[in-house]
Image 1 (cartoon, rainbow, N blue to C red):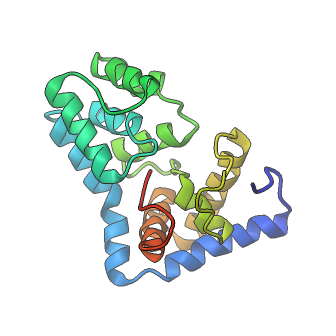
Image 2 (cartoon, one colour):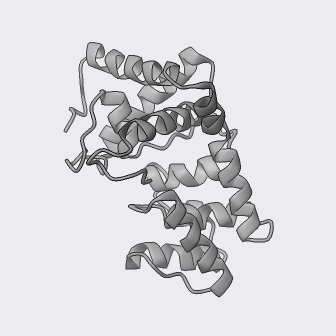
Length: 201
């Protein structure tokens, strides 16, 4: 696992690796990455008949260790049936609370991946939110970890990488979520077909 308190030189390398991945994006990858959270926001509104905030909360709560296609399917199913399923008990409990009317910010861990995923989907123009999943980690550190533990349950490690994405975004003149989404597209397509499993949030 990377240090939670790296040197300034290493922090700078993380920022540079993020920017290098951004610059490697094809025009098509750039377009898809820019649209990613806007499309997710539209989906959140669609599955909840216009209540995008609730939809974003349901999607985020069901996102851990699921492919995006599975995440979408479970979110649609939860809203259509009124009965969340297909995930661990803690996630399903969070979904049920959100669907019952609790504010997602009171249910989700807002300074971690799930809460940030909610923020990015609920408001794609959020100037601060950034999702650090396993792919975002690997982009920043310049190495594909595969099944090794990245230590992202550490609040300090998460905050470190989120800061690096925000710094990269500042230099690129982009939103942090846009930089993360574009680099996510580039990275997951690079590793497609390798021993690392497909894109998961």
